[in-house]
Length: 108
Length: 114
Image (cartoon, rainbow over all chains, first blue to last red; front, side, top):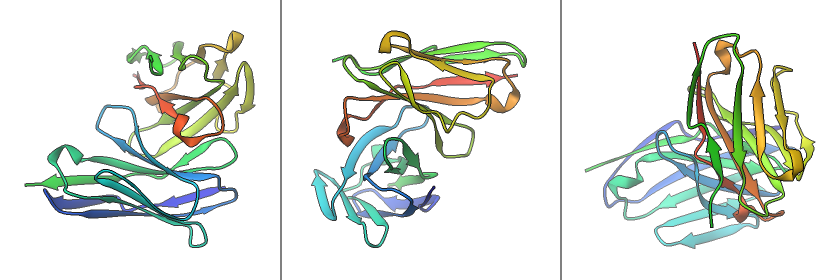
């Protein structure tokens, strides 16, 4: 089975940097997703890490350590529109298992 | 390219009634997945189709839920009879192959059972 842990809520200031952590214990691992989900909308793909290391896409970066069962999503130069839930999800053989999500509130 | 589309966007039904949700995946995507998010909980996997075949239906909660994908194109998820605890948002996703980037979600169907 899969077990995924991430903080429930975080608050950060506009223009700052925030790191959202995710730890997982899985019986199979083929990659880790980060999704952004605004209230009432579908999850939006942010990143997919298969190998260890840091991947950067603009203001967003995602890190993976398979040996530690650990990932983080780094958001730089926070904007008010970044207020959303951020979902960590682990892909097993085929299906994806989601964490409960971290609700990020960006304040002025 | 059209994304994953789901219909209806919202549905309110009475306990005991039947509801059918539809998902149209991205054209050419063989893999189709159904997920559900109930209030306050994480998104949970329901089942996975590869073309018209059920690859994994381990997440289906009980036999009141029936998913089909005739012809390997669109899929339907029928709940019959609906119960109060079935309320939530039902998401569909599709992907072309084994790559993670192909995983695309629809906007979801919000089901309310009263």
